[in-house]
Length: 120
Image 1 (tube, rainbow, N blue to C red):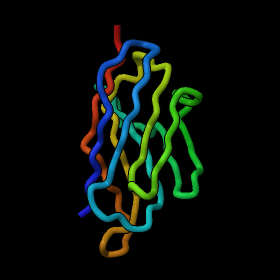
Image 2: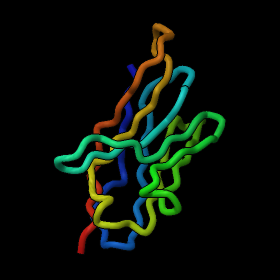
Image 3: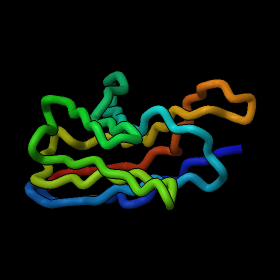
Image 4: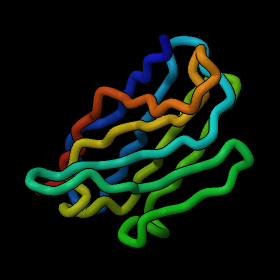
């Protein structure tokens, strides 16, 4: 029932910024955690940043100080502000929300992925 729709990806030069958004298109129950993952060509998917409903955040070492994750509970939306982008940030970025489904069981919802390309 819940669907996550991502937006904000694109191409930027090194040092540029992008802001990713992920909005739930339907009702969502009792969120446990919201996060952004990314997957570069030939690489495994990795956790980039996560945020709890209480506002606690965690970041991959590679993005600390450059990326900021935030949320808007009223809009069921999670954001990723990416500054000082580097070529190694190039990847498909996926939104992830773990929440109770209609059966009241924790379930991982995933966005469709949005491409971020950082190059000259």
